[in-house]
Image (cartoon, rainbow, N blue to C red; front, side, top):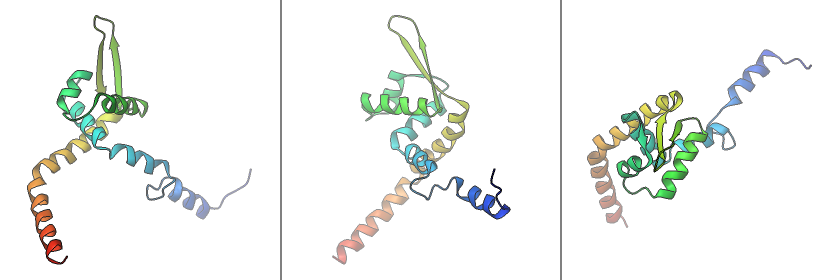
Length: 137
């Protein structure tokens, strides 16, 4: 077994996960969780204990069935959402956040609330910017 110096171990630890590096898996994870649908699904589940598929679809207008299904499958694969199937007619499928999902859901709910509270300010800045850009064009 080759020995490593303390400096080598520090450098390896420093570069183990660096989301600024394109090939780092944490960069891929950030890409996933920065998706609009992921944020809205996690926020909806964070605000309600359990939701059925159809409830999520109604809560998030504009999401297609295909996109909602893909998003929920990806979140389940990542361990952020759990899916429970109850045998009934029709079959009942419930979704809830896992403990890992709760830790992220709260953050994304805060981002959603920030967007709702500050949209008017951002929009005003956009209008000023666009007017200035048009004046210089």
